Length: 79
Image (cartoon, rainbow, N blue to C red; front, side, top):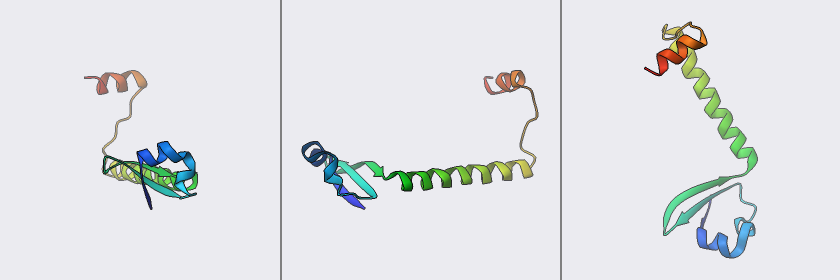
């Protein structure tokens, strides 16, 4: 992963990323941001969604869910 300072990006612009798939941007020597190319981001997002779906399936299997209309749902979550 390319590590680059925010000042380098200010001076050199997007070309400072050298077509990297991933870049870590530091500010005052501390990691602050990560830049991903779109393919890496989409894979990352897909994995997040798969993990969320898996967690939801496990909760359903344990019986931890509610069957209710939207009004009841809003009432329950805003208590």
